[in-house]
Length: 443
Image 1 (cartoon, rainbow, N blue to C red):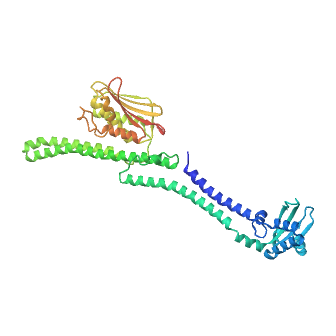
Image 2: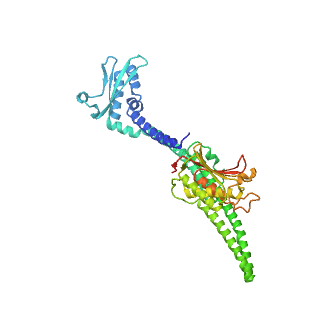
């Protein structure tokens, strides 16, 4: 993976290394004997000129050349032959004695430089010893910084370009993400607007992919909330309309007829209250329910069985408890989900046939299933079961279409899912599949 961290890290240290390395090289080069001798205007051609004058015009001409150098730059020169004999010198004897007595050559007021030169005509090799006064050397250094300054400028330009590319590689994706955040806030977010950024292999690509998933999830939630509001308004309209009709009739009716209308009014109010209760229960599943708790699976199933017995005392219930482990979660939410599944089974289960409640483990999951022996559901409608207010054709009178939606949302809040299917041996089976990563042992 091409990590943005390593890109920034490498660019930062590359810039530092480039500046430090160039500074070291320049400082080292400016202090080298060969650099000074080849660049100083009084020294760069002195050896060749001196050898040519000595071989063509004699000792006096070559010595005059050394004296001119001494007068112009205060640089003293000693020339030694191949056998070490002193051929010519402008360096005073007292200065030579003083230099010999100094253990630390860096404390001398001059810099001692040496170079060799071989005559192309006679093939004789000469050793040139230069003593350059330090003030002269410092003045020449200050005046010869054009090349180092140029090199430093080039280095700064390179570092600037690297910094510009690095900055653009960070700010451009951030601008795209900023635009996507703005569009998301305006509810005009397009899921494919970050596809190019999501194709990257660095942290911005990971962030873009996560943002796409978040945007898609938020859009789905917004769409589902809008659809829920439309469904709620549609479902509330019917009992309210019936209440209005009954109230209008009661206003015009005689006392005897009005007394007959009161049970109808009470029944419609109870239906409306039950519908509002179901809607509020579904809405609470998306609220903050606090921290998860340990779930006593045995007590939970006993409570569900007790509720079902009160609702339908004649109904047979069978329980198969193969495990006592349950995930940490919210017991009231799971009890409400199982109650809804059981009430749904009670509506369609024929008399004399038991409803089977089972709890077992499979592949690290807790499976809580409720099976009835009713007619089942058409296969093409199974995918839509669990949508708020959806009721299969022919079952519109059975509830409000919120029971399975509540059970599905409860399973999702526990990190699981609701599985709905027709049982192979007949009837319908609804299963809450809950992961057991964090489990609490039931009593």
